[in-house]
Image 1 (cartoon, helix red, strand yellow):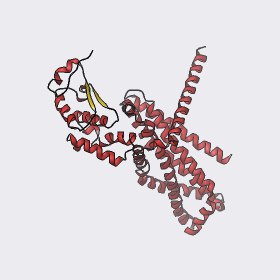
Image 2 (cartoon, chains in turn blue, green):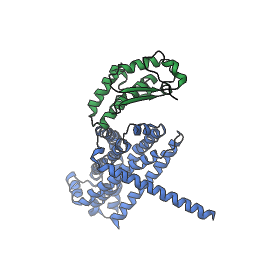
Image 3 (cartoon, one colour):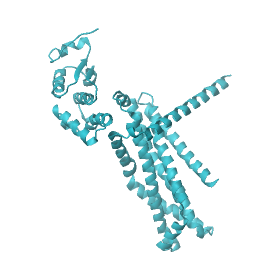
Length: 260
Length: 119
């Protein structure tokens, strides 16, 4: 009987939290499409958020894209030639870099940097009752705090994914030049012939989904922080775990949609 | 501080950030606090924070401003007279009320304000 009770309690809890998340999601969507949400204060926060999320990370991002990109593309090319798949190198590189690696790696990097920061920021604001102060002044916290972060997440992940893919493809040329003695024009046409609209759309849709959850989950987690400082690390920990589960879930879902 | 004050006008009256910031700095200048316009909370004194909160409240469309237990923010009422003097320097048509405990009445005796007791 105890087991049944516990199971029932857990199921109710699960459905309750799913209902809450869906409700929060709908609320965000409603604000997202409402032009009144885009007041000057919101636009200022949005600009700052894009700067912190996408611009501030660029130097380390470029460095990682060059180092990681050339090594990973090198491995892909090496394996392709080892298995006599030279004719398919273009489509292998495009699928690997544009469809999979660039959005996923960007999502991981932004999750670690901005996801954790936003979770902490909202949790601290919640514990310090700053959110209550904003409500007292009739300032909609969804418009002022959440929407700019979510939109900046979508814009930043999408633009950085494109940047990452471009740098990775560029640095991949270095490997093809030294390893396969391929000239730049051949490499360029190899990629241009392989790339399809589907690849670009995949990158855009995945980046949109990643950008959305990377901001939404830490915000939701931060909001749910209990009213004491010791609850902040717990909130960040839970938020980051949920975020990584969501990021992996999107990646698996996109793989299933693309390949099955 | 300036951004904190400007936020109210930017949200409720769609005022541009630069205009709202200028207005916020002007308001701060009236009480000689322009020096804290671009400082953060941790770099301001408690008195300065109370005055910034007061100016922020003036930015709303409400007809009156109520200061509830100012001692909780400034940590004591020994210099409340000076703070109220500073508040009076701000040019506003709003009515200002201070709600405090009867036991604190003595601190307000020297202030230029009407004191009313209620149960």
